[in-house]
Image 1 (cartoon, rainbow, N blue to C red):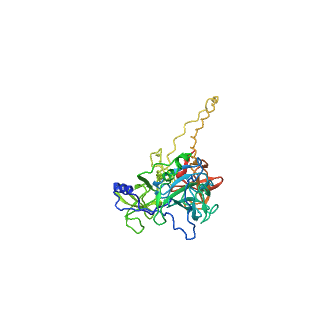
Image 2 (cartoon, rainbow, N blue to C red):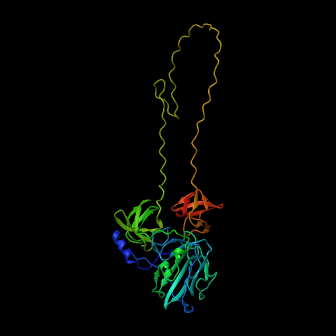
Image 3 (cartoon, one colour):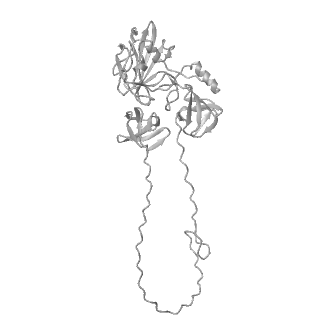
Length: 404
């Protein structure tokens, strides 16, 4: 899942006109790099195979324009995402030569690049989000179709363990990106039929995002551009799927067009900010029995003027009487307090990175498996939630949590 550097297809430009976004946008793709002069020529690719074992993966994201699933993710998907357990074997889709190996980190997606030759045309397959790129192969290694080259991981900008597979046609510098599913299907490999499930959603035309903090609405995709106005939290902004520039999205807010930094936008509507406490009401003071103003709490009352003593009546001997038997007071039933609602508990909906801080660059503690219980939310920071898993406190992305 990466940003792209090539001009978007004309259909996206048409969509942009529908929204009347004033500035044309070009998004871009990295593509395969140059071939080292020391790398052998790739062998002919005569057979093709699936990159993951059949029925071991789930198709979680299609190729093409999309909405930003988590902050930092791309808005044009150059490959096909295949979710699978971490450590699952990855296989070369065809015979070729390894031309690049890059180890992954929590902020950089690791990958292996293999160059192929098909009918005299150069093709490239790239396998992303791995952790260690040289556990099975090294640069210059000739590999066969179906040969194990690495293991599934979740390095870089990733919501969980998966393989991001890209296919490029042409020589480096002029290659064009292809949708892996139809390309491999023409060579006898059906990635959709081989999946145990296809949970990907259809690529959208537009995306609605919500502002997660006070945010400058700018005239251009730059910190030095003029600010149209400052948008409050929860403001809705509509963008064309697949368009971005310099970390900004061209959006429409109401009838106004401009640019917003993608790092402060979310597909989920942020919670309402807490209401300030209501001001305390002044105490109610009952009137004095004499009609004089009653003393306020904390004040010193003035002593009342003494009244003349009334004459005492002549004392008479009271008649003897038996004391009245007093009945014991019936006990008052104790008022029952309503039980306080239990806080909601959550579980993961996918294999999920567990980080030490609420950021995609936060150090990764471990990967929480799908369906695991993380208890209650201890704190919130934008789209991140603080939870406890296996006795360790850390942060997870709210997009991959659901109530139990």
